[in-house]
Image (tube, rainbow, N blue to C red):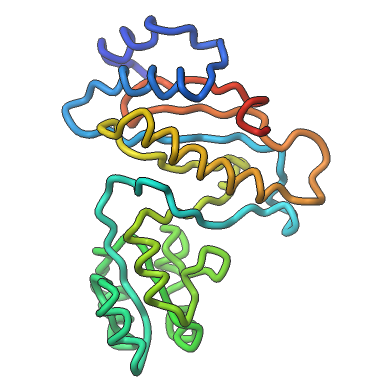
Length: 231
């Protein structure tokens, strides 16, 4: 893959093989985020887990201290008084069974997170083929299947993000935006790593976090000192 001039210049600004402390890595990634838009700062963690075993699956959610810097559109599936509760909490879209054909047949996907009350999961389950591959299916572990829709919506709007293993046993998560201060990115990073370190499966033998890279949307990745981030 041919990389642009800015990317190649950014790579020369640091040693790609070295492992950096979090503060240094954040500094480098911010300096290398030179695109014309506000780039997302992302963390990619390669784990020693084997996601094929249920007990080594990692999935959870954490509220980032300073949010994600992104406006998140929330859809809530509920009924009765919970519809009003979701609306009052600031959900962007609220509804029930009537939304199924809109999503299934019309391809409507103008939302980033889906929350559902447990009594609506029978209905939402019919959207598994559409929502599942996009990572939008509500899940109790992520706090998106709950009767407390007010808390769920508030947390998501405040910067709650979900983390989980992909097929290659890597976790990909946003840490914030390039426009954030170093301190804001550092706070978000600590919140994330605290949650991910706690999620270490008890059955895991060997090294939990094998490598970690911090990067911006368009910039090169900076390797992190794994020993320091897992303490």
